[in-house]
Image 1 (cartoon, rainbow, N blue to C red):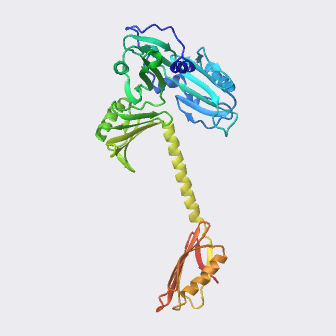
Image 2 (cartoon, rainbow, N blue to C red):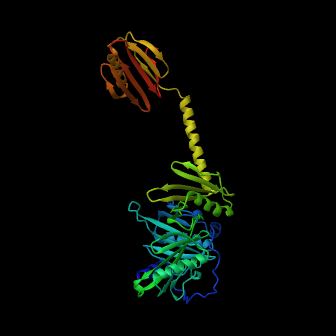
Image 3 (cartoon, rainbow, N blue to C red):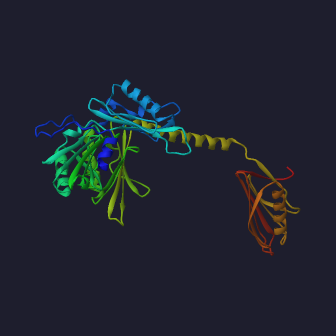
Length: 444
């Protein structure tokens, strides 16, 4: 048995006795939008096992988390949740002490569930649970080149074989999918990604030595938690469902990218909040909002070494934006309250004993300047240093010779600086300055 076939079987792919695709067969329902998928299930709101950690991923279409327990218990818990929500378990689930996996369907949608012992050695007795929504695309209704034979077709994967060369087959598959309304959405090795509404399709075409030199065609699909468009001509496009963000490079200009998104987004009610991009650090940015107050953030900057424009487009729901804004407001309020408290809280006082004969030239709440006789500056400063160190102030000497000195003292978040200038021909001048502390002459 080939490795690819073993993977297919492990994923729950079963032969459906599908002998071929008739030319007039209907394409089936349109690939789901996010709103369509939510009606079937919203994994971001699915109950978790008791004691579960904060999910590693929790979106409309993906859920991954760790919890105390074993594979069987975790699988049964999530199986019951799905069945209660009118999902039907497809025959072929495998449930053991070491792993559990199964596939569920509802109204044309496909969902996979798996549970495995946690790989984290620091968390023994925990299980990793993962659920993935694969959208509502009927894989057996996707277009195929001529002279293609079925290998296996199942809910999550469809596999075919042909005698045609891989390069020729890959181009034929691409053209057929584009003609059916699928839009380019990145490339990785022998796989191309295409998007229609909020479903991403993966089409892999490659030589299959294990099948007598034939070319294999594999289709799989996944539901996306956000419908983030991208131009057809991109370099290294990547989409992450955890951040609901698409990242790509392009040889196109910034103006053309903005024009593309204006045309792509306006029919759905998205509008830019500013007429022109605004600068954030080194990136040019635009923010789009729709009537539901969801947000799309476009960021662009040139990568000169690669001669490309790097583009990211990130989607956030109105609730996510509101949560961020609330968090920012709370942080601002906390900082304001702290500042107000500090303003109204009396500063601690440090008493400074001036040497005999000192003459004060300037005095405020946080500073004292005074003079002593010429040649007495360093001695007066040393006496102050000794007193401060005896009061547990930590000293840092920057310079301290007979003519000039600069010494800093710290205690908790308070700071005192001591400086003196004694040129030897005029009275020595000494300054004591405090930060977050009041300076006061002793004897008051």
